[in-house]
Structure formats: C-alpha cells, structure tokens
Amino acid sequence: MTLDIGIKELEAARRIFGDRLPLAERFVEHLASSGIDRGLLGPREVPRLWDRHVLNCAVIAELIPEKARVADVGSGAGLPGLALAIARPDAMFVLIEPLERRVNWLREVTDDLGLENVEIFRGRAEQAVGKFQVDVVTARAVSALSGLAALTIPLLKGSGEVLAIKGRSAGEEVTKAAKIIRRLGGVATSVETVGGALLEEPTTVVRIVVAR
Image (cartoon, rainbow, N blue to C red; front, side, top):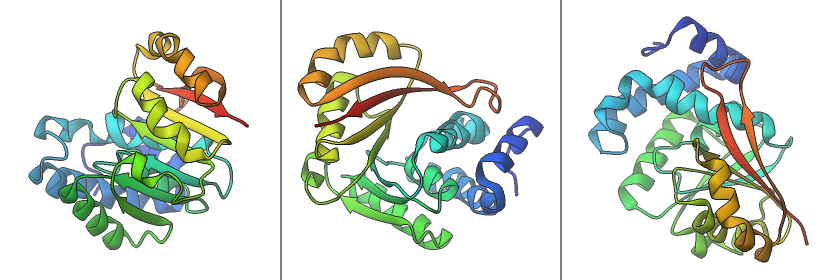
C-alpha cells in the first residue's frame, strides 16, 4: 500500500528507504489510522503524509554520520525519529517524548515494524541529559530555536550536532537564538536545504555544530 503517494514521491521514497520502503509504507499506514485516531496528527494531514511529513523528515538522513547515535527530541508521531530510524538502520535512535499516549503509540509502531535500532524514553529532554551518549540531536516542530537550543544542545555533552527541521523563518530564528547557541557551546550555525533533487519542496534544516 502506497497511501496517497505520487510518482515523484514514490521515487524519492525508493531512493531514501531502499529495500526498507515496505517499512516506511507501514509506518505511513499507522500514521493514517491509529495516529489520526489518537490525535497525533490531524485528519487533514492524511493526503500529505508522504511529502509533508515522512519524506520531509527522512531526507535529512544524509546529514547523519554513519553508525551515529541520535536523540530525537519531542518525537510525537515519530517525526522525524521513526522516519529516520527506518531510513538509517546503521544508526541508533533514542526517541524522547514526555506524553504517555504518544509513548505508547511509538512503542506499538516500533514493535510492529521490528525496529531494533530504536529506544524510547518517556520524559522531557531535560530529564534525558546525561542518560544517553549521542552524536546528533534531531527535532521538528518542538519550539522556537532559542528554546530548542536549550533543550537539545545539553544532550550532546559538549560535542556533536543538532539538526532542527524548520520552516521559512529559519534564518530569523537563527539570528534571534545566536547568543544562547554560543553560550551553550554552539560554534557554528547554518541554515541548509536538503532533498532538492528529490522533493518538490526541499527540507530546511538548522544545523548547529557543538564543540568543547
């Protein structure tokens, strides 16, 4: 089942997920059914699950180093965490989510898909600091960058990268958050677009390099 997916999106999905495309399709089926039923996404999102959500997230897999350890903050409906875990079986993912109903859904979907590279942590990002050794922190639709930096950078323990999926205001957010990013250890911040050759609308990512 390729739920509401166009020819271009299907080709992008094949390129991103490879032989794990059937897992991505099952993930989309979960989003379109129990994900909607439990309020993780609105019903109007169903026609846009592939392009606006799953592919929009999964395309940043190319920015994650090989065999990296990744923390996904505010995983919610598994976006981007589960999408990336499907695309990158070589990497390990910790999905950080405070709400019980979302955690339960994430566990059900992870178990159904048989994703052995996923661990789920119920709690806020602040509570996860020091509990995991990670190289990369991802986030999407969590908060403005100034607040998000304070949630994500401490998880890196002084070294690594934050990949925050953002919209058109990314540049403005970077300007506003510059001071707090530097104070937390960010040494370089850039706005990048990913997936231009694959997606109708490329994904905008704020990339923060953290170093001691």
